[in-house]
Image (cartoon, rainbow, N blue to C red; front, side):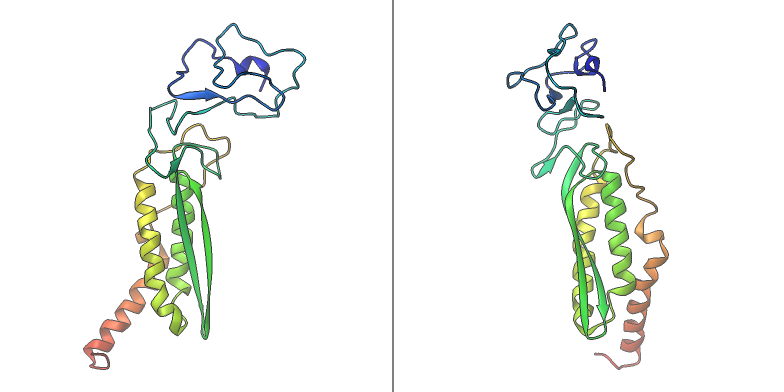
Length: 198
C-alpha cells in the first residue's frame, strides 16, 4: 500500500465503522482519524507491504454495519476477513484400544469456519468410532461441532479478506463421510431388532 491509502479518501469511511490502524513508527495520537488532506510525516518509516490501514471498530463491518455479538471478534485469523466469531472444533480418531483427538480453535469467519468444522466433523464420522472409548466420545464431539457450525452459519459472508477464505464446500449432510454416521446407527438398529441389545 502506498501512503495515499492511509487517508480517508473521499470520506466514505465512517468513524463509527472503522478506526485507523497506524503502522509501526507512525506517531499519531490515539483515536486519530485522517481526512483526505492528511499525509504521513516523510520521516516516518514506510508501512509494511499489504498493511491494513483500516480495521473494524468494536466488531462493526465498514460495509454492512455488522455488530459483533458477545464473544465475537471482527477479524478471521485465517483470511483476515470480517465478521468472525470465536469457535472450537474437534476431530476424533479411534485407534482400537485408544483414541486421538485434534482441537482447532480461534476467531474464524463463516467460510473458513465452515470449512474447518466440516472437515474435522467428516473425519470424526469416518474414524471416530473405532475404539470402545471413542464410541462414547464421538457423538459428543459431533454435537459440539454442530453447535459451532450453526453459530457460524448465522454470520454474514466474509468481506475485506486479505487472503482467499477457505472453501466451505458442501454441507456435511451431502458428503460421503455421512456414511460413517449412517453405518453405525444402522448396525445399532439392526442389533436392537435382533434382540442383541435391549
